[in-house]
Length: 377
Image 1 (cartoon, rainbow, N blue to C red):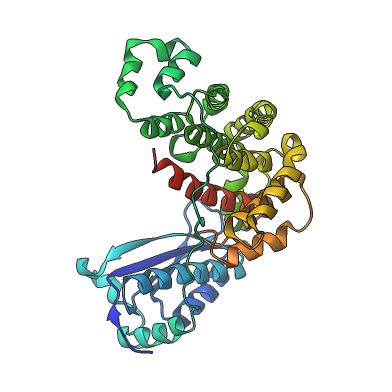
Image 2 (image 1 turned 90 degrees about the horizontal axis):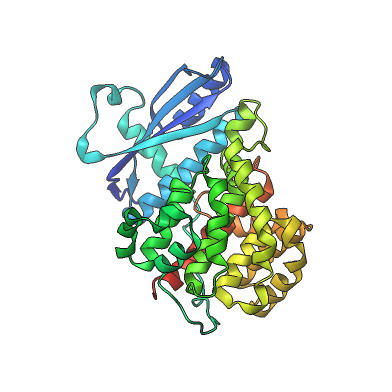
């Protein structure tokens, strides 16, 4: 493999393992992969655990190859940490132009490290194009729409009818719907107020005078609230297992939000027959998130998947939603196939519960579907 150019970015990795012996074993594995500055220390705040920090400095043919190598190495470090009973805690990225500190020159000789890294990266599988929707969701029936802010003021409490709320009136409708979503779940996390906001989001999503694309976005917010705990547990599976924590736990805010969404789901799911594709897709995700309420819709979702073609990206994701909605068999194999074909940005841990990992697939794909529709507003 040709050397290419030195990567513009330098990546550090931080892993946590249960004891000092595991830390030394992991450090040896990372050194064998050409990591530099491999250091072990007791992990503060994690009784008895140890931390392993390392640096990757390598060649890449170009920026795209550099990104691909970084993603694959992150997966590899996570797998090694998991093998030793631990987890990858995170890492940092810095510009090569910023230079190394003196401490960064300690460890494996740079020339030796670069040779090892070239051999390692040569074995990485080639990048695969991320699946994308074949065409924007369509079939939206014509309806009379009102500005979203006007609808919001008509259904919300008095705080949205006060002069202070008028500041939102100048926002475009797409910007406003995401402002609503952020106030409901700031940066995608559930808070004590999230459950209390569910009825407002649901009321807006049930209004025929809200543009269908915006109703779909509101339904997606409900999906995110209903699945926050399960998606979080799946993304955090290695750490939870290493620390002896449950994979089923939801925080109080996440639990309350899920129950609140389950309470409003039947009325929203009942709208299926009168909605166009963009809203129905988010209703399919909502049915998957609330199988107790969405099971009756599983057959309709499966029929839509078959009409799309179960080998197409959209058809495959709809099949996943139908399986989740009916809590049927085959989820593990379906999920593995979607992960292998690049439907998620980060490969989930094999320790992650399959439903939580499947909700991550639905989250990322639904955002792709919505982005194509919202861009047209």
